[in-house]
Image (cartoon, rainbow, N blue to C red; front, side, top):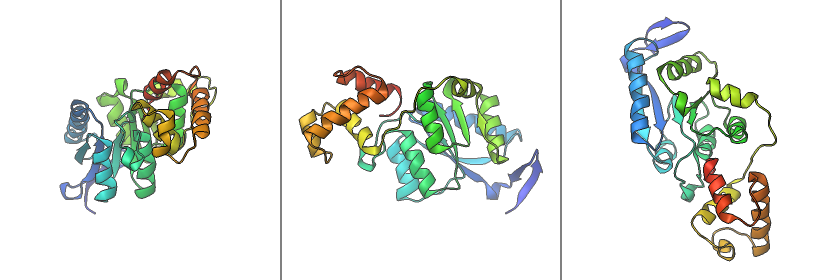
Length: 237
């Protein structure tokens, strides 16, 4: 592979050897903002030039990464996105797991609006992302610094991420695919007795799992809407 030089420990490829970035984010204007920052930083020589692709849904990202099998050098990954239940993808975190399985060499940069410590710790433990940013901090300085660190084999967590993760922790919120599917069904108004048409659960198991989810998410028992809202707030569904 040809390079146009090395600076600060980073190899800068020629135009014929551009690396690929996939931005997975459901807000098109946000996607465009990220792309402009990366393109301008590349033009200014702060980072290599990249070929940038966008996916505005989990379904589209799944098609890129799995159906088409396209490989990317780096992925910008949003967490709170519309579920794609057909492939058991209820958040960007689920897609991240799939990405690690299918494309283990791809570098993951998580950018999220979530600020709940337990949820962030869960993402950190599950994905071990190379970069981790809170969206409100995503400006040229932080995004470019994150890319530079990742290219040099180092991780980069934004100041807010570091501050949140340094605080006290009670317990992690760990949900399996069936629990996430169940929460998605509840969000669609599916009644307990109807759950057996979508999941291999008996009615007693449905009630047991619901009580478990209330406890895990710290929501008052019997309040299904509060449970669904909490799951949405945490970016689980």
